[in-house]
Image (tube, rainbow, N blue to C red; front, side):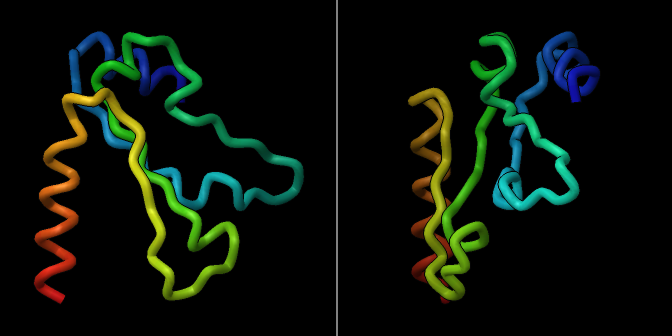
Length: 86
């Protein structure tokens, strides 16, 4: 993952990391959140996570994003759009 992060920083890419299953690991393996990397990647990234999978809250659809404040407006608009169309 370090090489991927370095490539994203070098290319000045915006990154979205879906970490909904990050805590479901087996056989002693570990995961690393995008938030644990240097600020250069965190400044242009959104981490998507939630409670439904890890805590077996089937049907609850409880999720959240972590990002710089300037990126929070659009996900909120998208979320409401999806919510209203269901």
